[in-house]
Length: 419
Length: 168
Image (tube, rainbow over all chains, first blue to last red):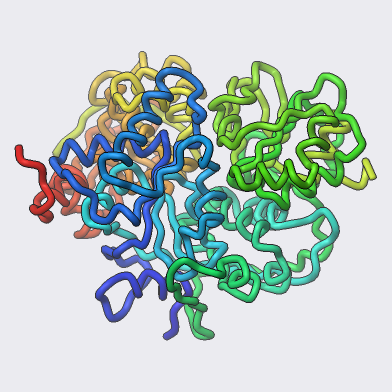
C-alpha cells in the first residue's frame, strides 16, 4: 500500500520503517515557531523545567507579530520576553519590528520553510506552509517548549483527505474562494484531525500566493495540515534555496479516508458570513450587507499579489464615505514592494490607511477593533463571535477583490460591480 | 482519579476565541485568564463555576487558534474536566500536554445543564447522578495515557531528557 505526501514526510522524520494513520509517533522537526502570544508561555515552561539551552538555535523562529508593534504595556512585556530569550539563546531568526512580518508570510519569504520539511508552530495557521509541499502544523506552547529541549514533537498520524478541483477558475476567483467553498461544503470539522491534500487542474494553475491562502485555512475545517504537492511553480518560488530540500509526492495507491471532487469552473467569489467560516454564500447574494470597515491583509491574504488585486480595483476610485479601509501588507518586503509599485499611493488616495505589518485586527488585537453593531468585511480567516472586538459586531470573510470592491460600494459587492 | 461536579452545557464548535478572547492573551496567568473564561458567549460563566465543575459540550470543542491560554483559562476558573463529543486537534494536544482532564463521549446529549456528574478518568466511566445514568468515553491510547499519568508533557520529557538541565 502506498503513502500520501503527509505520511511520507512524517515517516522520513522518524526512525520507523512504516507508518499508519491513527498511530502516535515522535518525530524530529526541521523548524519550530512561536509568536508574542504563544512563545512567552513556551519560554516559561522551558525555564520552569530547568532546561538551559535550546536544542538548535538555528531551527527556532520567534516573531512578535500579533500585538506588535506593541499595542500596550503588557504586550510590550510579552515582546520583550521573546527578544531576551532570542539574545540569551542566540536565536538568529528573531524578527524585531522593522524586520518583522506576519509569521506565515514571513517564513516562506525568508526561505525558512522548504518542501519536504516537518514544521511545527505555536500558531494554528502554521498549516500555511503546506502550500510548499511540507508538513506544517499548529501546536500549543508546551509542544513548542518541548521542541526547544530536544527538537522533537509527538504526532497522531493523520488520515488524509484528497480534494480535487477541476476546471478553470473565473476572473476574480482564487485560492481564498476555493478554500471558503471547501469549508462551506464540509463544515468546520469536516477534516477534523485530517491532513487535507489539495490537487487538480485548478490548484495546479494557482499562483503560490493563492496556494498559501488555501493551505492557511485548512485549520478552519479542522485539518492538521493543508498540503499541495510541489511543482514547477513551487520550485521557482523556493529557488535558490539556502539548504537542501526533498520533494515528496503521494503514491498512486496512497490511501485516502475520503476524496472530494468538484468542478470549480463556474465558482463565483465566496463570502463567509457570521459567525463561522463554514457559513458560505456567493458575494453577489450579499449586496444588502452594509459595511463599516474593510480589512485587507493577514496571513491569509496580505501578500503582494493580494495587494495588487485590491489596488487594481481601487485605482482612481474613492471608498464609500464613512467606511474605514485598513490595508496591511504582511511583511516589510511586501510593504516596500507596494510602495515602489505605487499600490500604497492608490490605497491612501482612495481613502484607506496603509499599515505596518501586524496580525492586529484579525484577532481583535489592535489597528481596527469593531464596536457594538459594526460590520467588517475582511480578507482574514476567522469570523467567530467577537473575533474583531465587540461580541455584538459582525465579520464577513472574502478574497481581496471582493474586499476592495465592497470598500468602494460601502456594502458587500462583486468586483464586476465597480469595473 | 474521580472528579465530581456540576455540568455546564455548551453546544457544538466552541472555539478558542469563545473560551478566552484574544484581548486577554497579554497574560499567561491561569487564574487571571480564568476570570474571563467563556465571557464572549456567557458573560457570567466564570462566576457561576464552583471548583470541581465539568464542562460538557458537543462536537469540535476548542476549534480555532492554538492558544494554550484556552485550557489554562478553563483550569483557572475552577473547571476540573471537559467532556465533549469531539475535540479540535490543537486543543486535544494542549489538554494532554498541560494535564487538563478530558473525555470524548457520544452520550453528551443525554446530559442536561446543571446535572451532577461523577467521572472516573482511569476507567473512562461517566456517572450522571442527577439522572441516574452511566455513560462510557473513548479510552486513551497507551502513549497519551503515559503523558497524562506523568502529569503532562514537560514532566514526561523531563524524566526522559536529563542532559541540558540548569543546575538547581
